[in-house]
Amino acid sequence: MSRGDNHALDVAAMLGVLDVSRRLAGPFELTELLTQIIDAGREILAAERGSVFLYDPATRELFSKVATGAQEIRFSIDRGIAGQCARDRATIAVPDCYKDPRFNPEVDRKTGFRTRSLITVPLIGLDDELVGVMQLLNPARDCAASADQRIAEALAGQAAVAIQRVRLLDERMVKLKLERDLALAKQIQMAVLPKSLPVIKGYDLATYGKPADETGGDIYDLIHLHGSAEKTPGLLLLLADATGHGIGPALSVTQVRAMLRIGVRLGAGINAAAKHINEQLTEDLESGRFVTAFLGRLDLTTHSLEYHAAGQGPILHFRAAAGLCDFHPATTLPLGIMSDPPMDEAAILRLAPGDIVALLTDGIYEYQNPGGEEMGTQRVNDVVYAHRDGSAQQVLDAVLAALQLHADGAPQRDDVTAVVVKRTV
Image (cartoon, rainbow, N blue to C red):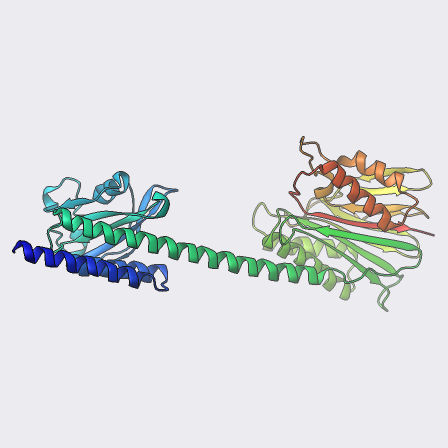
């Protein structure tokens, strides 16, 4: 072939690369784009087969999502010709593969294909990022010729940038979908919270909830029990906190709230509700997941609060007559750990006029300031005592203000949720 013929082929090949650049700018899925890259490489260098191996920096492996005539494979960059190309970030041309000790003939044996020669080119994208390796088998052009290597490298550069672009678009789409899913989950979770608090003669109520993420692992509920099935009017209280925060825990605590509501409709008492909710969570939650919960029923006639605190504590009870706060521990294990936990009859608190019960999640008690010091029970005790004559909302606002002061700018790492009940007369 004359020098003029070679020049004509080189010009045609570079024009082909430019055409490929235009085509690769189109909207492709990653797998479709890789197929386009392989087809372009085969066309420009007149190769029989081709592969694109993407690079996984986390494992230092190359893996193929698309390969003509071969199944998907994954291997370390410490192996083979493709691995050396990735390590050195340099083109490797092999005119006779079976004479090169780096060549692995195993794929040929499995597929029946005969690899005579190959050219392997690193895919280097923007910011000098190693995107992967392109390999073309049995090119008709001289793969060892410098001109052909430059053509292959020009194609590889365009391909690397195209792959980066598609990956960024894919990541953006995934992020947008996640944001939409989180927004929907938050909307659903917020919808199940009480739209307004019950108005109960002789009692004052206040609630607060702020998740650490878009969705939280805490939930609360207050249900005024005054239907025909009730022997005495009452107020059902729920505060639940699932391990972690996010969509999974949000689903768990929403499930607890739904089961409790169903139990109320069926006339179940506190003991039966706690037992059945625990059994269901034990079946549903994976190992290591659980829900701490306060389930309580305040009798509005006797002013006694019977409750189970399943891993939820401490339970603050300010006794106005004594002028001090009692902090009661959990009464049993968190829900969902075991199907038949030790569970006594419900504990009972009796509320006198001026008494306050505060259900606060550990996002309050364990909130750490920049020095790593937790909010703790003593600070909460002091705030409640100082505002004992205020309304339930004023007590809660004071606790939250003290929490903000204690935090001193430290980020919120856990959900902050509270229910405050005060007997006024």
